[in-house]
Image (cartoon, rainbow, N blue to C red):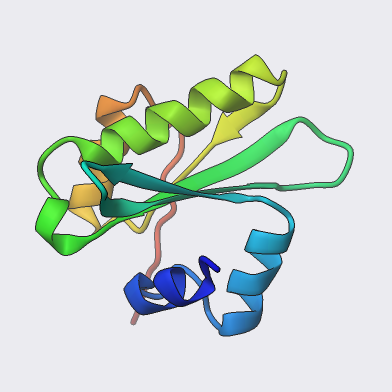
Length: 119
């Protein structure tokens, strides 16, 4: 029943509808609400089978951005991973300053940077 909700707010987090369905079926997505209003969603998935690392991420609906909701969602997912003996990891595009600030506020720091050279 959450498929339509997620599909309607998806901003390229999922590449296609099959990815949404897969995340729902695997229970790798959490919807976040406040006062009966959808704020956004958090996603998490194992990176490599039989390893403890989980990639976490989130999407906040535009009207609720810059209010701390993204940080709250990321912290919730990270805490849930740690509670279940998983290692949360995350990342974002370097030009996505909003997500980068959110991840840093949630306690994630970058140990690596990826560079792209174009000639």
